[in-house]
Image 1 (cartoon, helix red, strand yellow):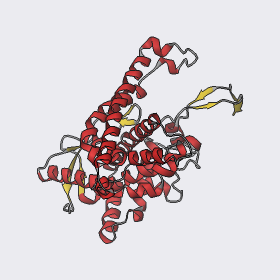
Image 2 (cartoon, helix red, strand yellow; image 1 turned 120 degrees about the vertical axis):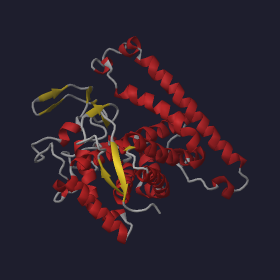
Image 3 (tube, one colour; image 1 turned 30 degrees about the vertical axis):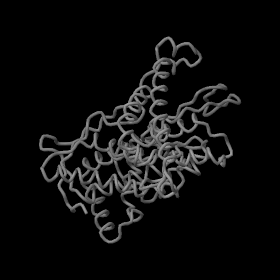
Image 4 (cartoon, helix red, strand yellow; image 1 turned 90 degrees about the vertical axis):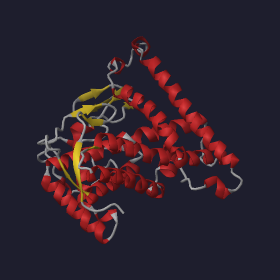
Length: 375
């Protein structure tokens, strides 16, 4: 299934095909902020950014016709799952005690969430099939709806071209994974980037100058090299998943740097600590995008000193999808608006709040001033 995600759902070509979705939703966000700017009001980016990434991911996963009906229902399930995954579970400390999840009520809660997510996904899939079966022509079948992940998976199931059986459980698992991985991670990265830049006016000004000059001449995000550095430095200090997906050494006992790791041990890599290790990073706690001037930005896991998305076969398959959303959103916010703190604030509190993703503990309220009119 990982191969299907990488080649069919989240390949570079597929991510490019979602460009119109990203642009439409970011345009709506900019218009909403512009209305607040015209009224002289601050905006709550901690609320607006997850709403944006939810809309983008919903359209990419399920299509535009499903977006308005699924966002809220799916968001409730998603929030509950995120709360469970990000919470403390004593069974994680004693994995050999298989009865602990049942005793603590975790197993029952997870089963309840599974049924809730299944109910929402079953309705979405049924609606998708009903819409297609009621269409009389191929053109009608598509209408003005974008091709989406659910369409691709259902087509693969029907054609049996995937090389592996694609059951309904697989389809629901993949779409849920896409939603889980595409909402909070991108939103939190944009939020942390804005927070760090507001606290570093020099960096904010430099990023804005690049965006406004580059997009004014040629609207191509590929030219925004300094913004790439800002995003990379944000991911270094605030990786969306501070603890990587657990690994298990199933085959044999291994020894690393005098540490003996028994066979069948669950190993959790602390990406947050690796990315801040002073042995590899000068002034590791400071936000310095320029550190990437002479250092390649590698999200593929080849640089083990910088692993915001993990490494190896279990690294995040949605890197291209997520970074595309982050870059377009940041570029749009910097191009259209000047940003400042509300009058009662002197600086941004950067306290972190750990959960399924690394979020800010306090909401990010900023005052926008329109620089470029919304076209």
